Length: 250
Image 1 (tube, helix red, strand yellow):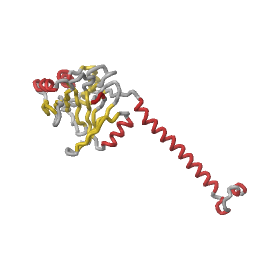
Image 2 (cartoon, helix red, strand yellow; image 1 turned 180 degrees about the vertical axis):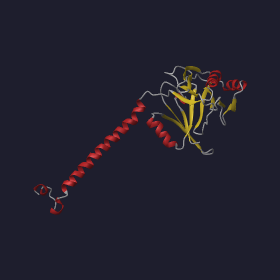
Image 3 (tube, helix red, strand yellow; image 1 turned 60 degrees about the horizontal axis):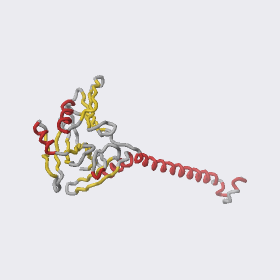
Image 4 (spheres, helix red, strand yellow; image 1 turned 45 degrees about the vertical axis):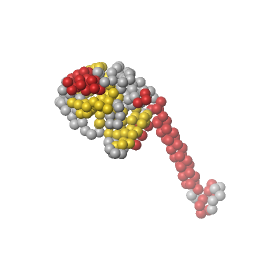
């Protein structure tokens, strides 16, 4: 009882004093832990920005590996960087690009033994390739019997010449004219998303990307956001920025 009396509380409340002290200590401890967690969260957000990361490659499945390799080499000017056959897992794959993998973005094509076609879905939009002469590339594809889904010509309301073609599996490629020297021709990977703001937050905070620009097109009911990294490999170069491409709600 002497211990309770030192609290200076009325006798009717003295018995609760130790519990209130313990509760106060617990609350203080929780606040301290919460502050540490928040500080750690801020540190986690910072390290991707400080990391010298870059995009390494994009992997996707193709129906005919040899035909796709030939198409990319002949029409897009890519080089085969690696090739491997894994019979025990029943697949083959090849890496293609425009330079060594330690400095350039590349494409990893995978062919499964028992599949010659795929449902490409609606989430993936297209790849984009920056080329010095889109007209010439389209003519080459046409002469080889390839599919052109949008003939080469200026964009609506602009001067940049673009075209859309489809590779042997059906993946769409946007061809974009770039007359200046091109360090990395693989310019964009376009993805469709359901929540643009949340996607931007994920790519910038979790993956350390930079938001380059956004564009709202209310007439056609879609928004665009262009994001990228600032590593060694340039995947998209507006104003010398490097980008994976854009995520869109279209």
